[in-house]
Amino acid sequence: MDTTVPATSPQVMNRWLVVLGAILIQLCLGAIYAWSVFTPALQTEPYNFSATQTQVIFAVGLATFAVVMILGGQWQAKAGPALVVRAGGVLLGLGYILARFGGSSLPGLLITVGVIAGAGIGLAYVVPIAVGVKWFPDKKGLITGLVVAGFGFGALLWIKVADPGGARLIARIGVENVFMVYGIAFLVLVMLGSIWMKNPPAGWRPEGWEPANVGGNQVTGEHAHFEPRDMLRTPQFYMLWAIFIFGSMAGLMVIGIIKLFGIDALQARGGLDEVQASAVAGTAMGVFFAISNGIGRIAWGTLSDRIGRKASFVIMMGTQGLMMFAFFHMGGTPALLYVGAAVVGFNFGGNFALFPTATADYFGNKNVGKNYGWVFTAYGVGGIAGPIMAGRFKDFGKAAIEGAASEADALAAAMNAWYPAFIIAGAACLAAAVLGLLLKAPKPPQAV
Image (cartoon, rainbow, N blue to C red; front, top):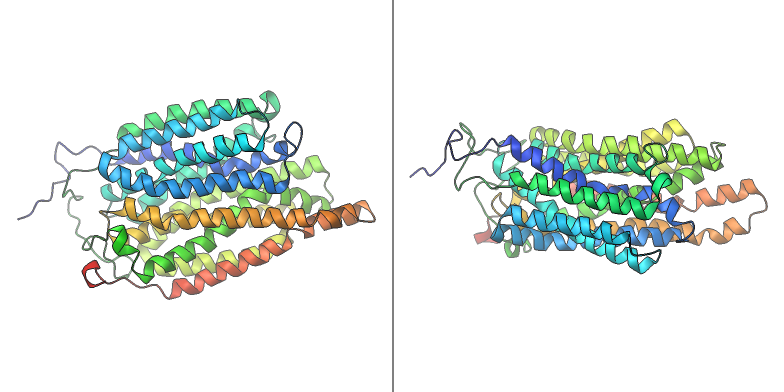
């Protein structure tokens, strides 16, 4: 008996409203990628944080985001998407609002921005993806790309509001008050977007659509429903997990350090003073990386619907690895810094379109919310490894900077301190491309 609910049924809302709500939510969640706009101010009075300390806050937020996302995926499967995304919005807004009153201590920002706001992102993030995949099984790559593009463009929005090159909110009202303003905005916008976070009726499919292979891949999304315990027994999970770690490590490292690295490189090789270098580096992150990050999510999602997830992984990770090797040498020239930031952002954004759709393809649409939470823990590992690794290399270079014979030598030493981190990140991405070549569809759960 056919239990499919026609797309024209009066009980089915316009599915494009889901996309609108999802983008509003993700715009707020993407504020975590705007963290680099705060790092220069956090290294001055009254904070006086080291480069590593600024990255520890970022890394804790990313790790909390990834771990709590498992809970979010499981909870939304039981309680429904709207409740979970609203809880996430409350925590996200509350974390930033409390940061306003946390003083200048590292533990205060670790708890408020890192743990509380990070947990809010983790609860809310998976909901629009899981709901979108269910409403658009015929366009999984495209819709997932559109949904998570909001996350990428959110970085652009919140950076430009706070950055000296934009609305100058940090300069106007101070870091603490920016946290307060952002927290209130996040709370309001997530609540608005949650209105359309509803699953389609059971058995619903778009009119005239039947399940098929995607981009030549043998996929199981409509025919096999892996529970997390089944998925965790497959080699495909661990391959996807490793690829995600390596790809996210490189992109998150650049997000965390691009402002500091850009300032060092542009002073050492570009002849810019600190104010000029800061403006150029801010533009590289706040415009070129952020816009390309959003576009990459849509482009890689759409492309993967045509050529398959496997080919997309190989191309994306391979080009990202090569760019990591080149980016260090490009950073001293404004135009090349912009190009490098755009390429890294474009490829990094693709992670968030490809991994949820690959999870749905290989392990089923029904449980994508629960399963993707486990896959996404790789992002937390990458978020710890990349930014903190780069921050440590920078701090290790302090002795060479302080012992330099001239100002020019000190600037060169400051820039060179970042070099090992880019080499490690590049090698990791190339390893991810090799793993992508080995991907294939898993056996059905009953045969695992």
